[in-house]
Amino acid sequence: MRILLVGAGGVGSAIARIAARRPFAELVIADYDEARAARAAGRDFTAVQVDARDEQGVAELLTAHHCDVLLNATDPRFVMPLFRAALAAGTHYLDMAMSLSRPHPAEPYQKTGVKLGDEQFELADEWEKRGKLALAGVGVEPGLSDVFARYAADKLFSEINEIGVRDGANLVVEGYEFAPTFSIWTTIEECLNPPVVWEKDSGWHTTPPFSEPEVFTFPAGIGPVECVNVEHEEVLLMPRWIDARRVTFKYGLGAEFIGVLETLHKLGLDRTDPVNVGGATVSPRDVVAACLPDPATLGDKMTGLTCAGTWVTGTGAEGGPREVYLYHVVDNAWSMSEYGSQAVVWQTAVNPVVALELIDAGTWTGAGVLGPEAFPPDPFLDLLTDYGSPWSMEDRTPASR
Image (cartoon, rainbow, N blue to C red; front, side, top):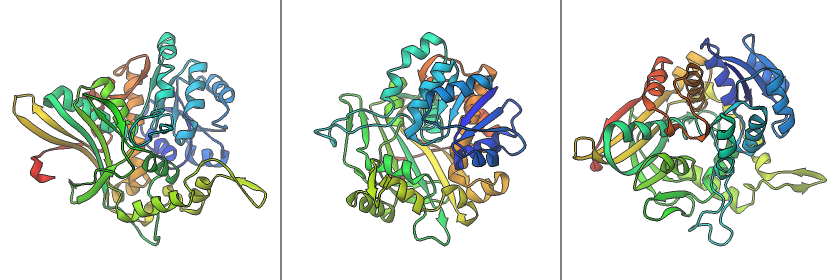
């Protein structure tokens, strides 16, 4: 399978390292910075320069290199031009984050405006007519979390009350007072936008950022972490394919992280529209990102574990009440020693490679704009384990939370 990987940052570089061990994958790695693409490609793959905003240029690149699929490892600003470029070139498409949302103009904390992924789903018929697959949201969250939800619906439950994605970690970065372990641009986007909640009786609605705090106990020694509502794709994807009364996403951010994000918002530093500074035009959010360390470079300063998982409650397949947490833990020491990638970016990167291998084998097939929960979960979970990173499941009772 010939894959155009657009984006050679932390996640893109980790994808290249993982794919280099899988014989199915032939990568052409494209980035605005050709030197960065070359570093990610190494001796295994081809590196090229591209501007992700240039739809025609990306489409021509796909054709020139005879690519079967475009794998988007850029931030969400570039989803739609890359999505349309793949459609124009007649290739498949995968991403790990969906097209951006826009809050409701009058009632942002009650009603949805343009939801995550809406712009992609508007083109679903075009993808289906062309017989090509746009697999949206196939990182770890969204992605593996959605596969877990599908597994629970198919194997564990006869009726689901709530699907709640819960993400927590005990990672520590030495030498920095504040150093996010993932893209701060994306983190600001998902944390300061109104979170979306799905309820079967009323559909999607929004809440204020950081609402409905709860303490969730994470496995592998991470322990109890306060989690809050955050805007995330799973809440928009899961109800399309899985029957559940309620779907939520909560992130274990911590009081300090929330405080920093709230301060950035108060100062207008979360804005993406350019401002004039001494004759130069800059985006405040881009300035914030430039002032912080690149998360991809923090691996040798990080210790601890990151956990991504899906908590499900309802009636079990045998008829009684059931509560489970399906999860995936990555130890930073392991991902650094095995792949040279820090835990958060590696955990994101492994999932699209697994999905591409299943597509290449003909195990996952489809056309249109689909989420990971539209496919059988067992082959994905089995192959993830084969990659050396097994998943786990805990049966729980409400008291354990």
